[in-house]
Image 1 (cartoon, rainbow, N blue to C red):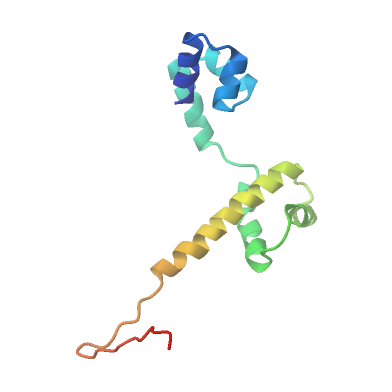
Image 2: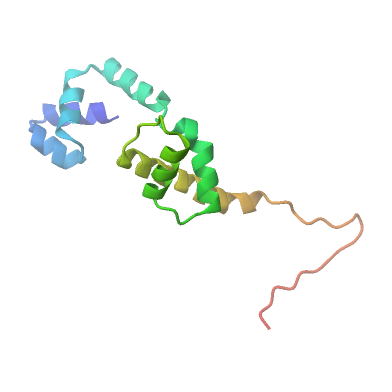
Length: 135
């Protein structure tokens, strides 16, 4: 857990700047973890995993657009979102990160779905041969 690493580095005499460089995290994160007990850090990490994303209610709509138009940019998705849902207030980076997240989801689907495709079966007692040679 990050909390333990930060506390250990601090106990070994590392400065906050050195901890930031070593763990590649923000200075504020180091200060936050240094103030927390182990139980508080554990509770905080658990709330992060349960927290929803701002664009989760629009996920199906975004994924449908990405399936239909896979080369859309996040800026185009944001424009369409704001046209369809005018009351939505969202920043460029939020949309960009969420579109990236949905894109990874779609990529995983494209990779794993064929693994679970229907297998061709022959009627009982019949045998077929499949020749995959390159002649």
